[in-house]
Length: 201
Image 1 (cartoon, rainbow, N blue to C red):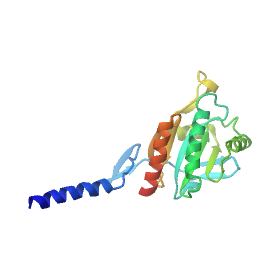
Image 2 (cartoon, one colour):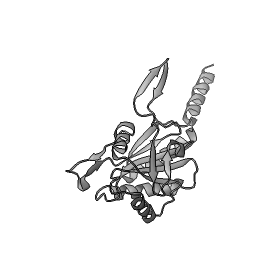
Image 3 (cartoon, rainbow, N blue to C red):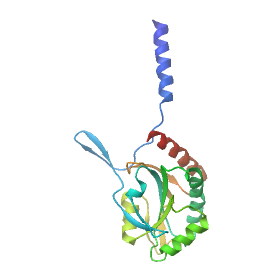
């Protein structure tokens, strides 16, 4: 009997270890009728570098990585885009993945400017959308929905302050991870977590 109990404990440990890891769900949570309801990214509508309307439907049945940048950023943006290119190269052929980069300087970053920027990076616009739109709406999306800093600041380099975060969003519009887009190690963790999330989904 003792050996049987030990065998069952060992088996449960092995089975537990084999269970796929699940990423946390970030953000505010409400309890409605006894169920947990998590924060989700609301409907949005922007225009990308190909003059295509980008909405939530663009990312239906996809996980995606979101970030906030501007093309004339003299500090962290070039580093972020170098790191995000790693994500692009890893997942560009996966129809269940996308990237969504929001400009926080829409007065300068027109569709044509974003098109030239994407071309310099050498990326496919069907996978990686660089979007522009109403400035206040973009700032609101960043600060309230993706939980990152995005706004004007005369003391910041380039006159705009923003987070260097990459935000991982699942197929149900829930935020599942935040990563420092300026650090190679953190982006490696993002890439690994994307693989985990795809298996979970």
